[in-house]
Length: 357
Image (cartoon, rainbow, N blue to C red; front, side, top):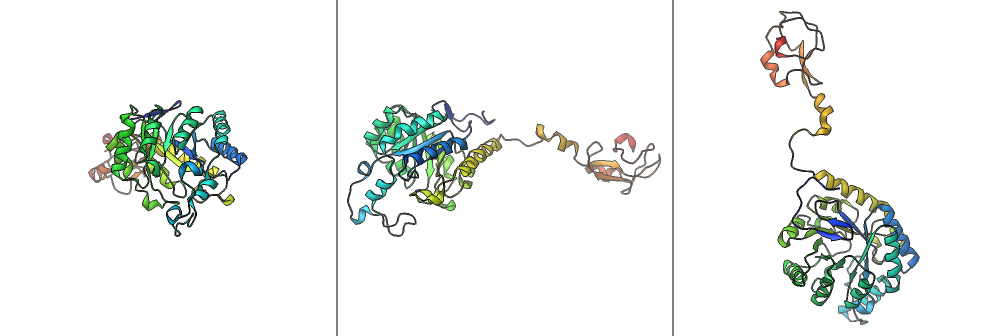
């Protein structure tokens, strides 16, 4: 189903879906490390996402060794004040959070069985090779990899759509990333507004940036949302977000590296439903009654005779009033008719007309 707004200049094609402002939001559910090291749980998450109606599930494809090195100096530790992972060593955190590569095939297969599009964020060239072997239909570049030009080039050369997150990046970073991808002959690009803090706050989301991303780089725009709940994502639709990415888990109470800011399945369903409603609500520029308001129009106020009157009686505020429904003269004419005389008898409940006074 397409909205009634005009077709935007840019769109991308992901599998069988067209992603643009003229189509319902593309909700990508991010599993991340919420499988908690259990393949069975990972497959449960796939099913829960499918049951919620999301069209896509996203993984992250890395190992601790492809994303960092096993070192323990201060630079390799997350700042102590971090709300979720303070003091953690990067290598140990990524060991815990990564999705084993041997799981990918089963997860992709389950997602496809359930009618979803599986894809992932690769963090190095070997991850791209794995995802190509699995026939990934789209690639996501994580915020902190936006400056990895060799990775961007390799992904761009697949010819698949590329979704860029912009957390912690400035305009120059975005410009370089987009131009790098386009230089490889790939113009299938989406750019997501993102606040790379975990969890992010609503006030740091800056949703007014979304149309700026769209118009500055002539791309599909969206939001990678790390806030709690769905309100920010639903609001983003009004600013032109065509892609919404949210982390998902089975139950936050189960714990896990990303559970604190992840949606539970019923919340994901609410996001799918409410973002669709928000998109439908955008409609078009229109001032005036709609077809669905025919009954309301019939019930608008108008002038009616509210007491039995006889020909020659004076029109007064006692025998003519503005009431519901429509059918009589518009209420703005009350001052015009007051003091005139009735031309004929009229019963209570008669709509007032010009030939009656």
